[in-house]
Image (tube, rainbow, N blue to C red; front, side):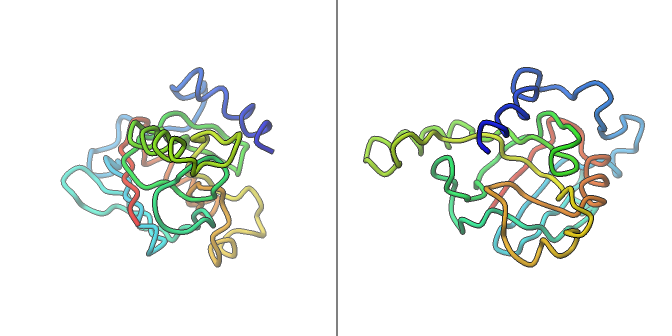
Length: 179
């Protein structure tokens, strides 16, 4: 599974700008209709899209990683990271639509290095990658999937919601994830 995910995410690592034809927020939209910030509160399972000036555009209930609270420690811990990231690239197909997130950041790398130095990282594990905001890709799962945390560290919405979010969120939008 990790090899498949790596292969699917390779284009966003090599070419972080949107792929040709990838949906993005329309530049002609008024600033108050485009998100300038995505805020995720893991404890409330809530994602807010914030416009310039602080107005909440949309609020969504989300599913997150099944690994619990706190920052992501290493690949495979199933924890949704905590910190400040950016949306970098997007593509359709994987979980309906996938917005790639710039995990790991410098703080994540430093935390991982410290944990590894202290012997708290299982052998063969890395800091991880491939965190994103995505849909479910299975019509029957829409709505139902939010009844439990099931991702490996991503943030999951219904398919229609990720389509809407993608239209409102340009690449480079800041994402702040808190517990």
